[in-house]
Structure formats: structure tokens, C-alpha cells
Amino acid sequence: MNKPGSNPERQTLRALQIIGTLTPGDFEELACKTVVEEYAAGRRLFLRGRHDQWTYYLLQGRLQLDGADGGSEILIGGTAAAAAPVANAQPREASATALERIRFIRIDNNLLEVLSHSAGPESYRVEEVQADDTAAQNRLFYAIYRDYLDDKLHLPQLPDVALKVREAVQNPDCDAAHVARIIQADPVLAAHLVQAANSPLYGTQTPINSCRAVVMFLGLNTTRDLVLTYTLRELFRTDSPLLRERMGALWRHSALVGAVSFVLAGMTAGLDKDRALLAGLLHDIGALPVIHYATGEPELAAEAAPLEQSIRALRGQVGAMVLRRWQFGSEMVGVALEAEDWQRDPANGADYTDVVIIAQRLLDMTLDEEGMAQLTALPAYHKVARGKLDVELAAEVLQEARNDVADMLQLMG
Image (cartoon, rainbow, N blue to C red):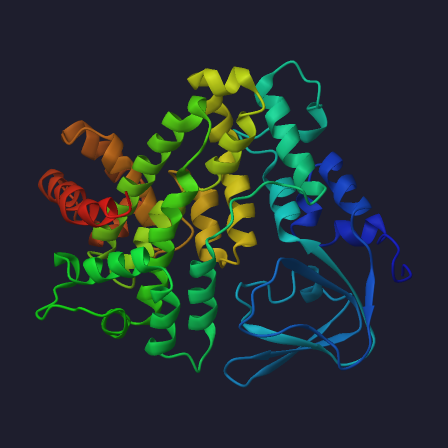
């Protein structure tokens, strides 16, 4: 067994799930960047309910996992169970505590995501790309990938008010008055929320006139998602005249996908409409850093076709980086990664990625028999809106999205 601080043995790494499936080049790069760590008995790897950026593997020793239901599980290094990442859901669904001295490795989720998806049909192979590559789109990928490895990647930052509201809502002692005080520090945002709460979308019978009343009416989670929704608009602005039109088109597309997702979620059991709206707005968030980096490649900034190809190739992986940096859980990260995987079919029940997939196809298709035949061929179709979408209902969904929900989004400017 390797000493703490050394690189783990290659044979040990190859036995681990996810890592063992990497291509030889990606595996070697990961191995060189991974070191063995050691904790004494009683130290925690992570706490239940928290977000973090790591995937952990236990190599040696015993680790206790304590879940929300009060149950405990003992994980022993070197066993078949320890070949899987340790309780890898985000936010963490269990706390992990060393029962004795343990040795483990932890890998940055974004690095693992980039390497494990780098062989996809629309991805670039890192070992084939260099900084002086003659293809602008390859140089773009190289710049993004290398900046990520050097922890210098330019990622959009969530506005301060959105971070404060999300942090407050995570506190079990938080109340509506506290969240309202945070929002009122931004009068424009507060006014938008009051307008949204009084819109036909929420069916208010009595006008709501104060920010505190809005938070009490909507609830903390819906308020959090709407604050994120409204503050996202600022991220889709750019000072580059060459890219301003593309950034505006990206926002309009994301807003429409969000609006249709909102309506579809209201017709789908188990899904929250405001969460679906946010998922639609975030599904292409990885395009923002790609567009930002394209300012350094005049060939991409000036020509639509190569820029679009670069966005398609990179948005999923880069979007996962952005959402993990923003501490979103696996649900939203999955939307960014898989929103264009038309044949995706992981489970029987609908999730937010299914809704975003159908929303995108509804916006792109012709509402006729041929278009519906293509739509019904998607696995997500049979999960969203109880599988009842036909030409007439699809038209109603689009009309409602473009009218009521789009009106609300229009408040963002």
C-alpha cells in the first residue's frame, strides 16, 4: 500500500469503479494527479446534507456511514463494496467517519467528469489537442481544459443575493422574514418577485404587496429558485459586440426551454414547476464559458458555424463544472450533461432532464403527425405529462409557455 502523499498504485486504481473505465491516456493523467491521504480514527470525510466537490474511494481501514434514517453501515477498504465511490450523492445522504486509521483518495468531480466523458461522440480527445493546434475549436477546448486543471477556469459567478438566499434556505432555523430582508437589499429583485407572485401563474386571490408576504406565499424553496431564475439573466450579457447576439440568442432559447419545462412539470407527477423552470434556464449554462473563451479566438467569435460546433461539443462537460462550482446537486448537474441525450432512459419515473428534453424537442419540431412520431419515439415522452401529449395538447403547452410564463421571464429584461 502506498504511503500517504504518494500516488496510488495503478493496479489499485484500475479496480475502482468509473476510474477503471477511463481510456489509457485519461487514466494516466488521473493517476498522476491523485494522492493517497490518511485520516485518524474519529475524523470525518464528509457530513450528511453538505455539498462538496469530491469523489471519495476508501483504500484501507473501516469507515462508518450514518444515514438520515438513523441507520449505519460499515465500509471496509479493499472489499468489492469499496470499489465504488463512498456514498457519492450530492448533497451527501450520509456522514462518513473513520472508525480506525484509514487511507483513501479523493478526486475532484469536475476532473473526473471531464475525463469520463472525453470519449463521447461530440467531445475532443485531450491528448490530440495542443495550444498551437491549427483548428480554433481545438485550441478553445485546450484553453478551457488546461485552465480547469490549473484552477484558473473562468466560470460565471452567481450574484451575491442568490448565494445568500440559498445559504439561508439551507439553514433549518431560517424563516420568511430573514429571506425577505436579504431580497429587499435588491429593490429591483424584490419588485420582480412581487410581480411574479401576483401573476396568473400562481393563482393569487388577494394581491400580495410585500416581499415578506411573497416569501410566505411561495415558500422558501420556490423563493430560492425564483431568485436564482431572476439573477441568471445578468450572466447572459457580454461586452463583446461580436458575441452579444449569440449570448442574447442563448438567453432567449434558455428562457423558452425553461418556460415550456415549467408548463410540462405542472402536468407531470412528482415534479416542481419552478424547479423545472430553473432546470430549463440552466441546461445550456456550459455555453457561457465557451462563449467567453471564444473571445480569444476571432475565427470562432466571427463565424457562427465553428462557434456552434464548439458549444455543442463542450457545453455538457463545462456545464457540469459550472453547476458543481455553484454547489448544485446531481439532479441539476445531470440536466447540463444529458439534456441533449435524446435516447436517455435511466428510470421509469420522470425527472427534470426528461422535461427539458421534451421541452427542447417541442420547440424545434413541427406540430404534425411526422413531428409527433419523432417525439413519441423518445423515452422521455412516455414519462412527461403522463405520455398524453398529442398535437393539440402540445400546441396548448407552447401557447401557455410563450404567453404566461414568458411574460414572467420578460420582467428580467
